[in-house]
Image (cartoon, rainbow, N blue to C red; front, side, top):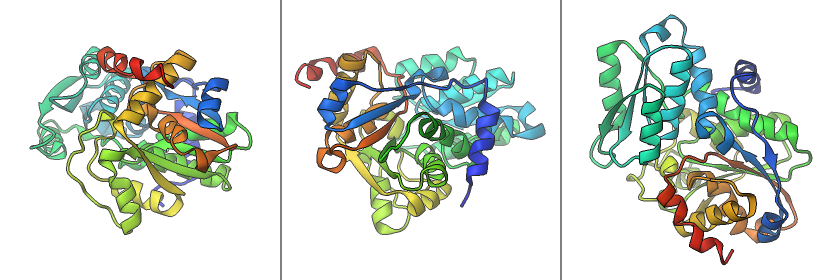
Length: 321
């Protein structure tokens, strides 16, 4: 495996006192809607508003002498913000390759942390090539958003904390884009709670993870058109696929309509702002009642960085939830 539980616990030590230990919340009304007991790990309350800070800070902390030359990353938003914030804490430069259609709030936040932004067209350009060219010119290290052992280890600390703070879970639902959060969570769960079923959840329009699991190899798709911008990836990484194929119970999907309904319900019942990608696990719990009925289910809410107009669009759906 690309990482072990020792890598995840080492990342937890690095993040101690730097990352927030986010709360695990419950809601009777959410439980009634899902027909299960939900334990929501609120990474929307993490520094910069998402779990991505865990992996970015862990990876930058381990760069060694090259760190002084800075970092280059590519991301639609949360990894961008995470790298920008982590780089500022280490006082090094950061350049972020972001798609032109990235949410305005995430672009503004990334700039606010001091990073330089280079735009690209996600439908016609290869972001990895753009980032590699920038790194070649500057000598900076490329920090990918998910397919990197240190990033995966850092992301795994979210599930490690969930398992430490919640007893006797039957299942865990983890949002899935490129697979860093899920892969890290699977390593943590396999070591600390091997009897717990762990599911990845991805947008229905971008189900490359589920296709890959069924095919037994990495399947690449066209850039998916979904409101879950944090999961608009076209393929799992080599490292993340290896871990997911070994440990995951299954991969579920949620439609954009289900994500909007989940966002609205969480806002109404818990008063929390959750972004579409962050609502994947909640949406899966709400729409797979037969699978999780009566069970104790951990749900990673991966982030809360969402434009207000997109968040407001969920409000009408919440009235019927």
